[in-house]
Length: 142
Image (tube, rainbow, N blue to C red; front, side):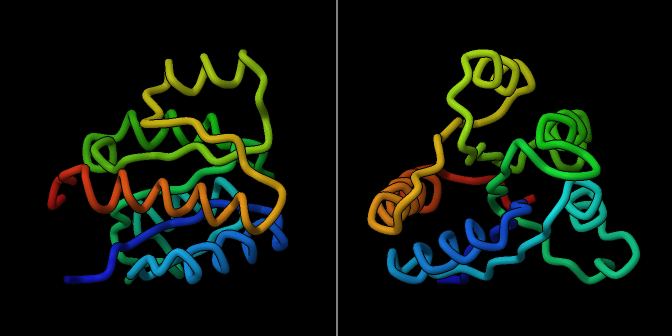
């Protein structure tokens, strides 16, 4: 089975490390790419500049509160792009604000998950993402 290509869009290095560790502990067979802001995320997805050889992600894990271009803007760009819109976008954020939840679903997020703060809970979330998005769901082949 080929590894799942995942793009993590997360500005907090601590949260990124937590996600990377959780993916390892959950034994997700993946290639994880990590970018730290929304501008970088769109360059990666559109294979621009230093990302000209970037792999196309099978799943995007997107934080909402990002510098330069926030996650809502990234989500709107992804879902508005004919070539990118079929990539599942999992919102993974600390916000539990109803306004954020409604807005991201209105922008066609595939799911919204509140980011846990400890490793054990984060591992459970990542295992759930793996079990659902990477084992049960049939994803398009681009």
